[in-house]
Length: 406
Image 1 (cartoon, rainbow, N blue to C red):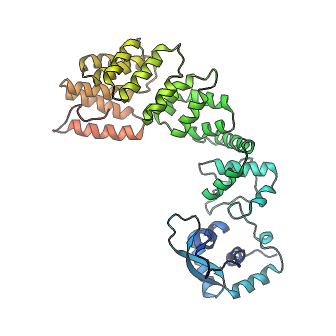
Image 2 (cartoon, rainbow, N blue to C red; image 1 turned 90 degrees about the vertical axis):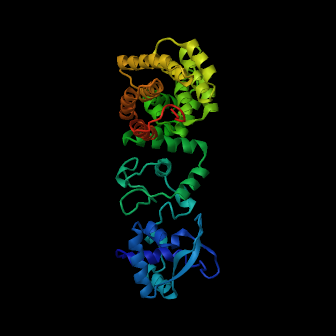
Image 3 (tube, helix red, strand yellow; image 1 turned 120 degrees about the vertical axis):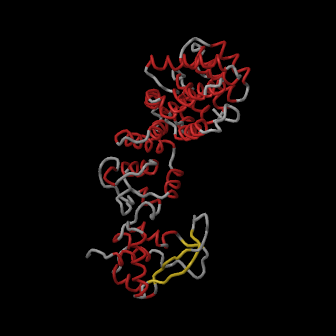
């Protein structure tokens, strides 16, 4: 058969919906919209608009307005069906053949039995693509080969709709999902996928040791910008024998997310051999709960002159208005960071120290410390907060600690 024009491909697509009664129904399939036509044919919406406009002038299609299935707004949109003339032309075109044989469907527009009929390797690749959240170009498809039913947008990227992902992942059994996650995890590793997504796929694939190793080697990146889903996964992993070192990562991440009950639960699983670490974590949770006196008492009990306990004790001193003592411990924490070469939480030490110097009447030094904290912060939210704080302190109306969340 000769190569189809885009108008003929559009006719073939709409021919599948020839039994849909536009006049009797209140809700239409997404596939009958310009977006749906473009997605089905792998062309842009604007190109689809030109095609249906031209076909309308030729009398091949008719247009109506209906709400669209799975559209939250349910505002009426333009939908298109073949006219009698269009249906007759399409029947001549297909000459008794199945339209699906001439214009194959993709995973967004096919029955589930079409997917089930594929070989397991093809199903696993499509399943993995349904789980992968980052954009995937068709040249980067797992396995590096052509896969049946693969939808590709005009830019060349795989385009599996959210509804399709939900349908197929929802009907997959546990073993199937494990395989899909495993393929997705390997793809993320080979294509420099996001750390959080790699961990989640490894956990979904039950490759727990690999997930723990990856999280352990990237612990500071995780704690700097914690993702709730990743932290939940690490919290689950930390319950396994020999993996309680991840309990600290989970506890601190929950603390940064403001999920204090989960932080306390995870902190309780930190090894009892790590008395200072566990105590410092509990002191920070108490401080976040507003129990400043109890936090200071706990921080004093576990102080052992290392980075973590010095930082926590300095924060607790400042929160209890003991600013002269606070700067001693906060400087100690910064010195330990410099000596160890690990500057994790440096911005936090600097900004707490700055607020103490403000309360001690030294705004010039406080401003220098805040500017240094701004330069060292990694979290965008913290960076924005510090920029605003620098602006306030450097203004004529600079204010002190009161009313400032640090």
